[in-house]
Image (tube, rainbow, N blue to C red; front, side, top):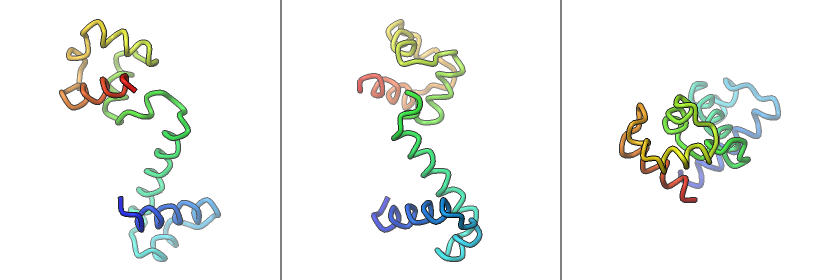
Length: 107
């Protein structure tokens, strides 16, 4: 993301937190209200991830949902699941998500 976009998004979040309406922010920044809502949602997710509320927050939504659907809720459970070689059998997990999960465990 370009630095000027990051700065704009930070400003949108700050103004929204101060009570500005999405529609007013959209007019101010020359965006649609839907785009402002999207920016706010992305920035909220980014803030939650950096706060480390859940270990899966560092994963993509698809990867986290696949793990949760299998009943895996902790890093240790996922590590044991991968060690057992069961990751390729997980519904919805392709090569990309598989590599993402393995890289996440390596951190």
